[in-house]
Image (cartoon, rainbow, N blue to C red; front, side, top):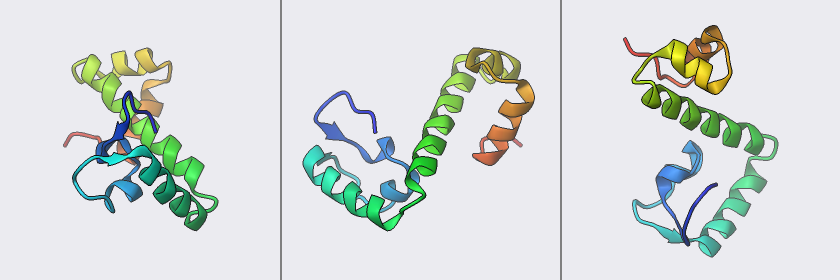
Length: 96
């Protein structure tokens, strides 16, 4: 979780955590206790969930920076256009 201040907002968390929080900021120490419980209950999944969410955010950022140009976004990320297209599908980011 990356946060510049003392407050972490729900949109900064991976999907499973975000759905369970009230739509207001909470203090980091309360969040730490909550996340510790979630980590224990999701043993074996935490790394994948965290990296998937980070990858999705990174891809969304690259697509935004390149105004939707997938070739440029892939180059910016240092991956192939095919890999980017696969990830866009994985995260439901393909435009119809």
